[in-house]
Image (cartoon, rainbow over all chains, first blue to last red; front, side, top):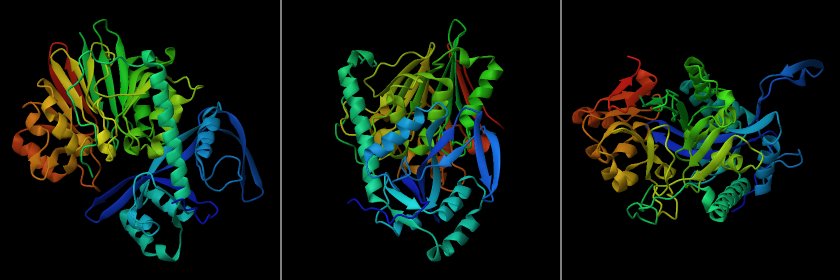
Amino acid sequence: MEDKPNVHINTIPITVDAVKSHNEYHLTRCTYFSIEHKNPGSPSVLRLYQDIMIPFFMIDLSGVITAPLGGKKQYFDNASDYDNLFRLIDNHPDYYVDTNDLWIPTSLLDNSAPTVRRGMIYRIDENIFRTVYALRETLTSDEELHSFLDVFDAHGVVEYSGVETEALMAWQNKLINAMKESYHANPQSKLPKKDVPPPPRPTTPVLGN
Amino acid sequence: MSLLRVILLDVGWGDAILLESKDGHGNWHFAVVDSNDTSRNQFTLNFLKRRLQTLGVDYKQEKHFLDFVLLTHGHADHGQGLKAIMQEFGTKQFWYSKSSSWGGTTGLLKFAQNPRQTSIWHHQAIDDGCVLPTFGDVSLDILWPPQSQTVPEPNENNNSIVLTLTLGDSTILLSGDAEKEVWYEIAQEIPSNTVFLKVPHHGSMNGSLDGQNPTWLDDCPTGAKLGISCHVGRFGHPHQNVLTLFDDSGFQYVRTDEQYHIEFVIDEENSNSIHYHQ
């Protein structure tokens, strides 16, 4: 299934990391990619109130990534979009891409696609992002979160993005395969193996939830 | 005299563990196991910076300062922040689990494979068949995952690398988030000289119990001290049933949500000590 999201401007893609439940709390930990500035001293200009320009030297920047590089595509629809994002930004002397987490009520994700699972990507709008980000940074309380959820139905976007889920998985598999090929091509560069093999283990996954 | 210090940082949730090893020549070695730093809250990175300042260690003198960075498994509360740490300090080795589900931490794989990155000298997935280099005078070994495993576990927690660190005749065991299915396989391999064990999966039920039955505690040497890197409140970590088990079994435990950072030290003469906020 490669569902393309009904793209809304300024939605943020988040990736499901782990679904948690305990008593009254049903929250899903998700991650988002951010661009980070690492070397102080880049001259920049900030525009306030449309016409007030403030020149400054940037020390720190942290920005949430919402779309692939180039500004022409609104969502990541293939592995190369992710690969180029990381490759070009990480190879820049002043910036890098990082991963951060936040917690989002599972009920918001449930409405968009059945069975929330690790690796699934959703797009959420700015209001939801700001609310759950504040929760992450303990800038808001659980009570405020529940109040927000009470009015959520009237506002806000949460949408499963199947095409981005597939693209991230494809990128991940490409990297894993590259790692395995490198290992087999250069075994002498890897950690040595024990002379006496460890005791035999199951070769198929043990039963897990 | 050689010593090993393991510091479980209080990071609210997740794991962040700093390792310090002084070898017989008086040289210090440092390593990091997991991190829960965010871009805005680089707690582990700043703690390590400040710690090195206090010890009078200038990490900028060495391109790959850390002996190793270990990502036990691909969950964000263990992997986020490691990229910034490796960029800041450099590392000789970056080790990770044989997961097939990296999700948001896929970026770490990309970073390691980037031919232009200079922060990591060597990286690979590891298992119990690997011979790890010594950490100062400390021997490292892996109990899980198995070399024979060809398909990663669907439950990402069960891809956790379970690591032992041995100095003299004392062992410290770091368990990641390994759950009961893993302990069924390896509990009997918990070294008999284990003196400190990081409780699996933040003290959750799945990490230590199968119903009412302990999954690894019966194989843990009596007298070993337990450290729990806990969530604050919300998700019931540590679970009360797990704490009751420890109490009933007479095991001493300390928890980061109540006792802040936990520091455990062993030396080559087999003495050990535990330090935490009272």
